[in-house]
Length: 192
Image 1 (cartoon, rainbow, N blue to C red):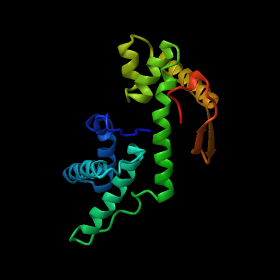
Image 2: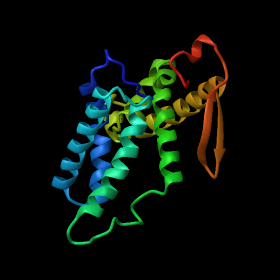
Image 3: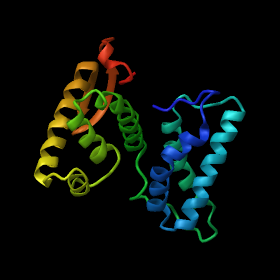
Image 4: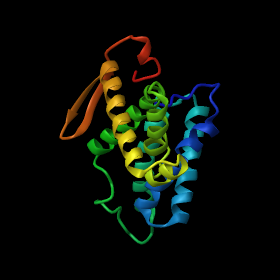
């Protein structure tokens, strides 16, 4: 969870989420220029909220919720009478689930950093930084099967660490809730 504080550099926080937000907006409006405009609107809204001392506690979740409403507002304001493509807009519960997953994903990096180096580096490269397993294998001069094996083991190790630190509730294959279960030092930086 990204929580803005007066000392935080909003530009860095927004830059970290920019690509993901822009991808979401492009899928919703099918126009890269409009998506860029909507992204700028989001940035203005977060600045206005922070300047009005209404800084959201969970900036990341707030940005995604605001992105969704910004898309709806965009379709409402178009003169063509076009409506937002209902199939592309998540239901509120789905949006809440997505926000919960995003929030939990920010907790995973500190836990992943605790893994042994060969597993940590592979997991961070493939699952966190978005590199393909093929490119990681090439960069590390290893076989693709070795990288797949390391990634699989790293995921299992990360899951074990997460479940030691947090109580995670899952329904229909999706995380519905989580909370910290332990004050162990290994959980520092993990879920709240």
